[in-house]
Amino acid sequence: MSTYDVKVWSIQEHRGKDRKTGKPKTTYRVRWVVAGKVFSDRFETKALAESHRSKLITAQREGIAFDEETGLPEPMARALKTRSWYDHAVAFVDMKWPRAAGKHRMSIAEALSNVTLALLKNTRGAPPDDRIRKALYTWSFNKARRDAGPPPDALASTIRWVAANTVTLNDLEDAALIRKALDLLSLRLDGKQAAATTIARKRAVFYGALRYAVELRLVPAHPMDHVQWVTPKSVEEVDRRSVINPQQALDLLAVVADKHQRLVAFFACLYYAAMRPAEALHLRIEDCDLPEEGWGMLRLAGSTQHVGQGWGDDSEAVREDRELKHRAKTAVRPVPAAPPLVRALRWHIAAYGHAPDGRLFVTQGHGHGSVSKETYSRVWRHARRDGLSAAQSKSPLAKRPYDLRHAAVSLWLNEGVPATQVAEWAGHSVNVLLKVYAKCIDGQDEAARRRIEVALGETGIT
Image (tube, rainbow, N blue to C red; front, side, top):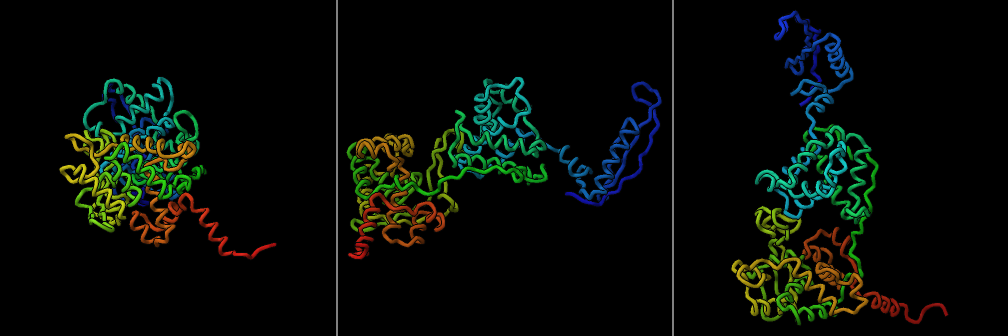
């Protein structure tokens, strides 16, 4: 708390004896009152006492608030209570950890590890940059590993050096230092410009860490708000070149069926129901209404994220179950299952069954773990190689499994399904849907030109 209720008293002179030598000694005490609480400081010389008293009076006259805890003007109190960037970054990680998903925890650690290299007081005796990043990412900014015990011997000296050699939060009021940090965040490890989305993500983490410092009143205002540094524009729209048409989707699914039958229904979920891969991995048999004929219904209740060992709530697991993206933990999103998807899922269940917990897409064997991202990504790469022409394979066309979701949403929109309904099925707001997903599927340009040609008829310039 801060207050303007301040009274500064005169300097008191105290005559006594030195405790060690027993010789006469005079000290000078400055006393002042903040919100009814008395504070005092003792000085060896009158000049030092007068200097301190002068600072208090000047702050009082200039209308600067005083901190009730320390009794000092707020700028002096912040300097007294400031912490190093390293200590604050660790505290920020600890604050975010309980509510963050594993992938978000990794993203926070990556951004903070990178930006810390720009916030070192000096480089004397500094370990190599890659060792610093590794030590910060794998231990300092991973709460679970810090809680488990001291750092590994190979990292301990690096962590001690970094902890003792980062700037303080007060130093971050220097705009040049903030700009240096942002410039570093915009680069990849090889020194080249990072993707715009990567820069935006890392900048958001850095901004959040500094906002936490403002929240704790460790800095008076957000240091980045006064720095004219422009984040590169990111392309939020789906690249129309990546969106396949229904025939191309069937061709690719046929290739998967020929060599990896176990994943046909998985990819079908992405294309026919616009599911995210993590949502398909979470799909359980009880979530599916699959009639023998016609349309079915899927009720999506969560997602299974690949987070890497040591980043989830279970430190030994590499995957974790989370709620639907941008939804409450108990939210359920119904999505209609087109007849081709119903047939694919019914065949999959008949051929492979399901795991004891009801999951449909699990590994073979006794573990019944979810299919890994590496596995389904590799299968999809092979399907593109064998199912597309050489030119198409080199293009962005369906380059990632996630692009099947883009194709599904684009198809629904182009076939006239209302945007509000598509947004509900896809799990987006209408605004995000129209901004990101409203793209024509491959081959629609020609059809549109034919419709325009028919409309124009025989009219025109002769």
